[in-house]
Each structure stands twice: as structure tokens, then as C-alpha cells.
Image (cartoon, rainbow, N blue to C red; front, side, top):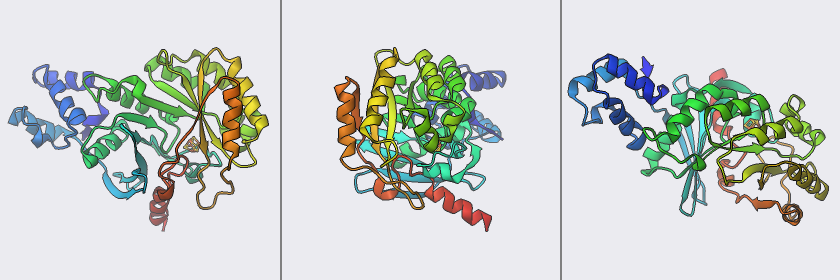
Length: 347
Ligand code: SF4
């Protein structure tokens, strides 16, 4: 059966019009699903009974079951969702003042194998469908009873390697008929795949951020094997061409790992790399979040010295608050529950 959340507004409208539905019906259905987060066609009370029955016969509106929900002392919540094929993905809800951010996954596992990331250790299982991407936001909004304010694609997987479904989900997230998020409130984070950065820029206008983590190819290739294929220069060129929303700074994420990428020399190299570009950047320093079986360690005060060096070079630099580290929901820590479920399935 066709999953209704895999369809864009225009596609649903066309199907329903062919069936004799009035042209405004698709808008009403989208409103129920993406604004009121309703999963059952029976609850769509402004739609005629026969039409609701048609929807039930022809479409699914499936939301994966929440199989784990763990709350952190700082208010962060990690969710694990059991998909239809029994694979598990993780998403995170991060409250911060008035901001309520959902961190979304795009793949089960990840093929890029960054050595500091727990998801990378899982390997790649499969891409998520458009509906599975959107369902994470809907399920979390239903669980907490409010619409989140921001969406970040920083969960499991490299979003650009699931470009088709990512773009469809982004269109629904930002469209007036869909969730109606401002593109400024939605950020896709990438490890940097130049031709896919260009493709994304042609398809949607959305904030992009780069998970850079090292200022030179030698260091970066040690922790991010994808860098052997796409060196920093090619990524930075693609970023310069990317149609980022105007007036906003482009974010560079930088995970600080003790003895690997955190020296003053690295900070100097990073400053000079960013100053070469025509783009204006903001660097977000993230202290490494350890997980079981990982050989790396977080830094201590080096993070402040690193920040100071960048600020000296007039580069806006923030240190990300550690959110959800006690429940393994922090950056780079997702995949623990998903791996456990995978192991159970292998037995
Ligand atoms: Fe994949 Fe991102 Fe983890 Fe790298 S950091 S392995 S791109 S999920």
C-alpha cells in the first residue's frame, strides 16, 4: 500500500483529483498530518466519511513505534524507533531555552565510517524513506505535545547519500502545506560530498553545515576516510557555490579530539583555511563525546584556547553545550540501541 507521507503535496493532490476529490482535499489531509500530527484517517473529521474510507483502503499513514525513550538530566531525550523491517534508528529532542530541536536520522547506520562516531562503527544498513524521515519529527511532536522549533539533520547517516528522500522530506518540512518551517530553522549537516552539495543546492534552499573536524587533509583523512575521496579544497569550493540562505553564517562543526586535531597549530590552519573563502563562517566546537570501544578522548582546556585563536582571527566561534552525553545522545554517540537490535537479529 502507498505510504501517504512519501508523497509531496502536488502528487497527493493529483492522485485525489483523478479520484474525483475536490482540489482542496489534499491541503486538508496535509494539515492533519503535518500540522496536527494526526496518524489515523478516521480522526480527519472535516473529510467526508466515504473519502476517509477511500484513504484507508489506499494509503498507509504509518508512524514507527517508539521502542526506547531515554531522558537526560539536562532535558534531552533520545528516542529509538522500530521500523517495519525491525531495524532501529535513533533521534534526539534537545530543549535549549525557547528552542526545541529535533535531530533527525536519514540512514540506518552510515557508510562513511568516521572513526570518532558510533554510527560510523555500525556500517551501512539502508537509507530511510521520506516517510521514515518525517515520522521521526511527527512521533516526537506527538510524544511531547508541541511542534519543535528547529530541525537538524545530524542524526544517524550522511544525509546527502540519501539525497532523493532527503530533498522530498525537506520540501514537506519547509512547504506552507506541510510543516511550514522557515528554511533558516532547518539545517542539514554533511561530511562534505562536493557533487551532492551542488545537487542539494539546486533542489532546495536550506541551511547547510559542514562537519569538517580538521583543517588539513592529512589529519582529516585519519578520522574521516571520506576525505581520501573528496579532499578539503573540493569541499570548500562546493560550499562557496552553495546557495545558503542570505545573511546567515555558514556553520563549520569541529569535533575536538585530544591529541588529534586540537592544537593551536590546527586552530591557526583552520583560521587560514576559512579566511581564504569568500563565505562567512561560524565555527561550532564540539568536545568529543566518548563511547564504548572508542580509542579517542575529549579535550580539556584546549577547547578554550582553540576558540581564542579563532576569535583572534575574527572568526565567530562557539562551544557547543554538551547535551545528552549521559544518555549517549550527544553528537557522534547515536547508534547504541540500533546496534543492540541488530545484534539480536543476527543471533
Ligand atoms: Fe556518518 Fe556523520 Fe557518523 Fe561520519 S559522523 S560516520 S558521516 S553519521
